[in-house]
Image 1 (spheres, rainbow, N blue to C red):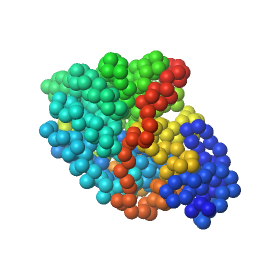
Image 2: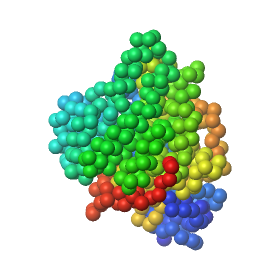
Image 3: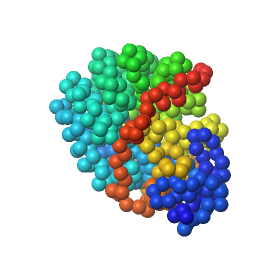
Image 4: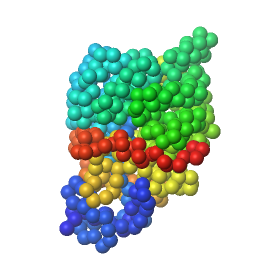
Length: 471
Ligand SMILES: [Zn+2]
């Protein structure tokens, strides 16, 4: 007998959609079928039943140049749950001179008591750690962290080509998975200094000093370095058409390279930087043109971009509005709560297949990041699932969301489609936009350690031979 049956919904997975009941026993999915019996039943007629969302790129209570992102692990994970995301992956960022293991222990100490849903961590590899601490990688992986974040921009984080190569080699040796923020940081620094010398302080200069071509150039270089290192590579927050072309080219050759984009690049453009609250829209890479946005939607529907994550990194309206120059504005935007619904809007307008929506928001991120038990609806998987009402309207406003920030880039937008009920390991955590569980119940997910897991080989196989025409 099942503890709970989610009855009569349309089950949607990355493979397709069909009507079925889902039987849940304890924390796991026990059965998918028809006429299932349970101690309790939830009627999901008229709704989609999908795996819980997996957002592999969030920055909760993260210190950035004198600011701290305003969502805590508690508030950010509650917001995620209310929007249908039941797995988050955040970051550990070691300071200069700090060991990765120390930094990991501290970050877990912050997150573990607070999280409302399950979460994992990526390890950032700043310059100091690449130069002095790469031999720690295997111990870090033994602690359940196997994805490593690198940057080609930002001071003490910025790896030059030789360091990127060394880090990729070391990650590959340990069986880890490299992810990269790819922009030409050193050259962007020059462009920013030039703009300042000429007295340009307006937010729109944030975009003008980070041209799309330098993102594409940087990704192309990184992919060549990855090829030399015999390494796969995952590019975070791809923002523009030229970058997509570079990725598509490499994928056509069957190389294990993966792209992620975020709601802000799919929904917003650089025009927002010229608006009355332009500073609020500062994020890196910057918002791009409408043509770039169009290219990203196509790339997402065709699979060149495998993942939509949020890069959720909220700052208050005042923190974003006050700085006197674009160079001083903390970068980042919130969207952890609305992600599933924002991407679903493309399903409604017929430009993204229903199964692609689930694939890029749930399944592929779980698979790429070795999050066992997540991202699928099948017996044996964690009973993380969302009963998603495709007709439910949600107008974004302060007060409607649970994100701990006093504005949203989507304020005033009415989205059609929102979770009716959200379950995490069989427990109802959110219902009709209300959080109904408790913080601190979430668990740390040790990634990539399933016995016999050969994630890299599986990933390379998944992607080679997939015909990607144009993007
Ligand atoms: Zn980020």
